[in-house]
Image 1 (cartoon, rainbow, N blue to C red):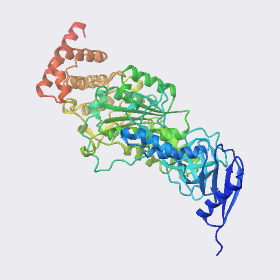
Image 2: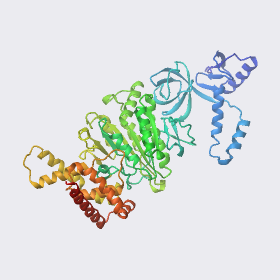
Image 3: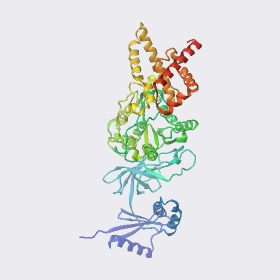
Image 4: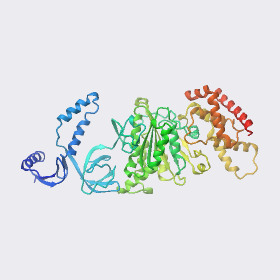
Length: 582
């Protein structure tokens, strides 16, 4: 049997001289046997060369290749503490380049943020590849003879036939305390013009979700400060609550108000912007700074002008940052705004990679796209530090259709949804929460005892009001009890209106609910209720400070406290009505 002949090619500025050629042949015969041929091809490689054997084994002796080896040697010194500086000096002083076999790939096509590579037989899904011009890409498609790769930068300089190297690493993002208060892109690089971020750790953007043993049930509230949500659809630490509705119905406003409400509560907030305008995100960041919320918030931004690959990895990068803080035992709130655009970016990538389209042209694994992201939010067990990550994914619907492909997928993954209705929004009911279609599957477990006791039967009262309103809208003759029920329901709906960027504290919500549900506000005209509610809260803050502090700190509401609230609210309402002639 004839022994295989190995073909080696040297890529360099100049051909090797006889002495160099002899050394090459000695090395090649030692590694591959006696049957080796050696040829030279001209390529501009300053201060070095590259050696390719059988178009499979790649030896990089260029300046860049030697620097990569040096960096690899220095990374091994991480975690040495105060002794790291002398070790680095010693490593650099005594370092000698080693012959390294690297798998070399070749670009067969590139465009639209996608590159197809051949020759990488051992590459794995999710691995980062390095192209000749410094662009990085991530493996997304494995076929028999080629690999599909998404690019994290412009592909204009990538041409057919250019080399590609494996890094044997998965995509990661820098994490650390210094990222708080900053605006970063999908790769963790700062984009707010405030200089570099000093971080010592990185985390893979794709990470398995915590197992069942590592979790515990949701038991603590993540209060939004929005009366309509905290009273009827409570959100708990570690929960995944979907915010869903048509365009321009206040979805982002609810998420931002929830972030504002976490001030002084030791909660790290992460806002992931996917496919939004850069100007809108800049305005949002300025709003958070003005409110003092950027002191505990990180913004991860992949703008509408960014390539689809960056929009695709943005929520995973934000989730990896959140996991870092969660594993330190902290509470994290993460907002994905929005996953509709994320699904569209993934559909774009999948179609460009040649995957078969399914319903609405989305690929078959679009459910897994979001399930593996949202399942990473959890309330960790005490053995794991007790940290939590609460997710508020946002999904945009078309004409209120919650039965579309992406909305139904995400509804089935999350622990409830807050549905915002266009008709309510344009009627002035803001936040435009549809009480009938919204739900929290955690329920009272995510409420304090005070809030649970104060909210009582508010959902039932509103349901009765809606039903009665439908039956009486064409009636001209109503009895007094029906009229009273309608006025009471209208008062509740008006009380649930809340100005943006004005979240309510727990004791304020408890006071308003106790007063309204005990019919203490029936003497107040409907159009005056919101103004009277502000006066009522100011009155309690000034005259019943001890009661307010006790509710806020203990989270409980005694019967005598409730009676005190109702009596004081009723007296103030009667007094105000008499003074203003209501």
